[in-house]
Every structure is written in structure tokens, then in C-alpha cells.
Length: 218
Image 1: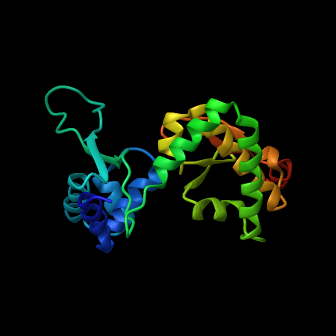
Image 2: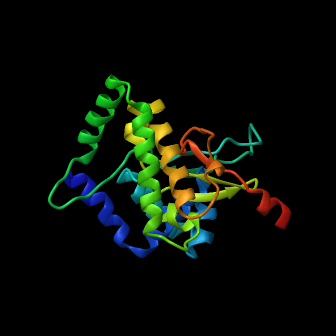
């Protein structure tokens, strides 16, 4: 844990900043000041002030939306915000589980033990389901940091909780993540085949497909 991490996360103690951050994060892309202000229920000027503070702290990134109209009279390009790609974490006392996880992932890769790792991940997902009996899978995934959202009848996952490891060992980590989600579905009494790999830049590699029951009911 660094003092910068602590200072950055302390900004979210303010309810307006926390609300604006949540709005931008939930959109999964560029959000204008006006859009964020309306969603958070504050003025555009106040929203701009707090959004820029979140950019300074490294929690958000900013840019400018391309203008449809070019040349004289087109006005200034609109400023937009998106969630920063970096990570912030706070642990008291400091802990470093990511480094050990990276070492273990390297050992699995070196030993060629991918099948065993996937089996263990699926069992871990089923065990996780046992703590959430009767809960919908969307709620469980939300609690685990996946940030699920619906698109085109499927359940996509905006955030990968294993992002750092997935960048180091994408094939291993994504296959284990898939097995984990399949085990979770099975443990909740759902169809594990709903979980499939469907990677999209900036999001989790796993998607939960629509079931036949959902299609018939819709």
C-alpha cells in the first residue's frame, strides 16, 4: 500500500465524488460532464470540479470527444471521462498476495499443470456457490467484483478481478476464470455451459450466455 493509494481512495469518502466515480465506472466508456452530472443529481459545474479531482488522483482518465462538426463555429470539443486502467488497493497491514499468485501461476505453467488448475478452479467456484445458496449468479458475481451488466441478452463482465495475472499469463488465467465461473453456476444449480470465453478489450474474458429458458420466457 502506498500513500498515493490511500490518498486517492480517501477522495471517494466524499459522497458526490463516490457517486460520480460509480457513474463513470458503470458506463464502461467515455462519459461527458453533463451525463455524469445528471446521473449523479448534481450541477454540471460541480460535477466537472469533482471529476477533475478524480483525474488528478489517478482514479479516472480524461480526454475529448471527437466533434461531428469541424471548422469555424464548431465550438470546443467536449471533455469526457473514463475509469483509469490502473489499480488502487489498501491493506492494513500491507499484504502482497498478487506477487505470490504470480509465482504460483508461473509454476503451473512450467509444470504443464493447466488441467489440474482448471479442475481446482471449478471446485473453488462450486465451493463459493455454497456460501451463496439461493442467490442469483448476477448478485454473486457483483459481490466478487466482476461488475456484471446485460447486453444483447447475455451477461457480460465489465471488470476482471484477476487483471494483473491475466496480463502475465492470459491463457492460464482466463481458462481458470472460466472454470471458476462454470463451477459457480453448477453449484448454484444453473447450467455451467452458460459460461464461455468471449474476450473484449478492457473487460473480463468470460460471458454468461442466455439460456433457452430465458429465450422462451422473453
